[in-house]
Image 1 (tube, rainbow, N blue to C red):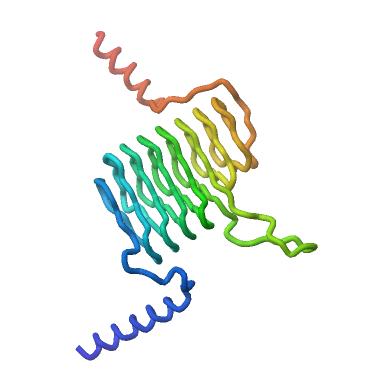
Image 2: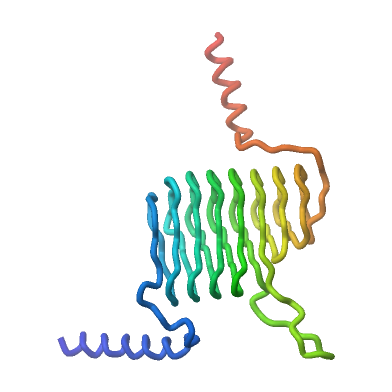
Length: 235
């Protein structure tokens, strides 16, 4: 019993020390997060602040999705029919930030959304497909200043991703970018500038290499399998 009390007192001491490191405007923990709506699966909640919401419209599924919030009055919205695979995380660091995920958007695994700085947003349209090991962010996370003026030269900027966008593995979408509708972002691509509708962009930094194209969710092996099965049934 004594050993247990000593252990618990040490944990409480560590907790108090960590609380001192948190900015004062973010100290309110009561009512730190409200999850509204219906969903399948579970969230892992890492919250410092108050008045924050996760809103699930319709029915979406989550596989241990991390909701990491440091700040107040932030909102993360999942429209109907989203599917979020394992090791995905949605961060809001600041206040009055919005992350909105459009209906029927899917995340395979290890996708990280990082919305930092007050009032910024990440907006994703409907029927988007995020593969794996992808990062979307609104900020550089650290301040850069000009030597002549001492003023900041790298302010954060919101990100907007249109409808029916496919982002392939190991890609990054950086601050201030608008990705159009019906776009493919190829593997290992860093998007630093706007991408127009109906295009394929690849490379670091991303360059548009094809236009007037469309993509489809049906996997290539599925069509091959269907042909094999049809040939078998036709015998």
